[in-house]
Structures are given as structure tokens and as C-alpha cells.
Length: 193
Ligand SMILES: [Zn+2]
Ligand SMILES: [Zn+2]
Image (tube, rainbow, N blue to C red):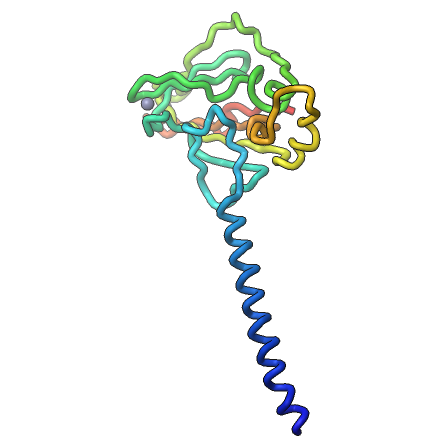
């Protein structure tokens, strides 16, 4: 009996310190979740709004916006949608969404340019109503920062660890017509690795 009574304070101390350690670990895990880096390329920092709660360091989904905040966009493209240029319906700003010769592993890291630069860009019109104002969605996948640092930072060129976001391996672009609701979730799907 005396032995059991003697054990009680020891078990109490162990229990309390266990709980404290658990809380500290849980807090650290939450902190890490908050600072998770998403693979949003540098040129889209002001244009990509992550959506949903499934985004990780290897995949991010979201909406494309003009830097003025407007999500009504005209879409110009060429080279079978390997060059995609939205134009803001509000402030008329033109920005680059995807250029296979500059973005992604092949374009950014390897410097491969598959585009015919002289090919004219054409405005995409809704196949249902003919209008040209769209909401644009995008999915980007990446091998992750660690993989980039291991495979691309060979010291031969000017790449830095922060460039990992530009070395994505896939970009998918979806469109939704602002006028009639026509949607194409696979409007462009480009492997870039
Ligand atoms: Zn704008
Ligand atoms: Zn339409």
C-alpha cells in the first residue's frame, strides 16, 4: 500500500510532463502547418489565390486574379496553350500566366524553349455564347523544395533555393465563362518536366 501511495506523485509528475511535451509538440506541428510553402511561381505571386484546404508544398490549387483584384479575365494564347496571357477585364492589365519556355522545370531550370515565338496569340471565346470573359482556375504540382535543392542546385548556374517554386512539373488551367457558365476543367494541361 505504501508503495502504491509512494508511486502516485511520481505518476502524477510523469503524467503532467507528458501532457506538457504533447502540447509543445502539437503547437510546433501547427506552427509548421502555418508556414508551409506553396509552389506558387514567382511570376504569379500577385495573381494566384490559393483555394481549399488541401494545398501542400507539392500541389496548389487556386484562382487567377489580376493584381487589381479583378477575376474577370480575357484569355489569349498560342502554341497549343503553352503560352497563356490573361488580360484584366477591369484595368486591362496584361500578364503572363504560363510560358513553357520560361516556367516550370524544362523552361526555367533547363532553359528549353519549345515555343514558336512568331506564332500569333489568339483570344479565346466561349464556345457556347461567344463572349470572352472568364474566371481562371489553376493547379500547379511540384517535386518539392528538397528535391529541387538536391537536383537543380549544382552550383553551375545562378539558381537559389527560393527558385524551387519556378521549377514546377505541371500546370493545369481551367476556364469558366462569366457570361453563360460554360466550364472546361481541362482547358490546358501541361507537363513541364
Ligand atoms: Zn486589373
Ligand atoms: Zn459563355
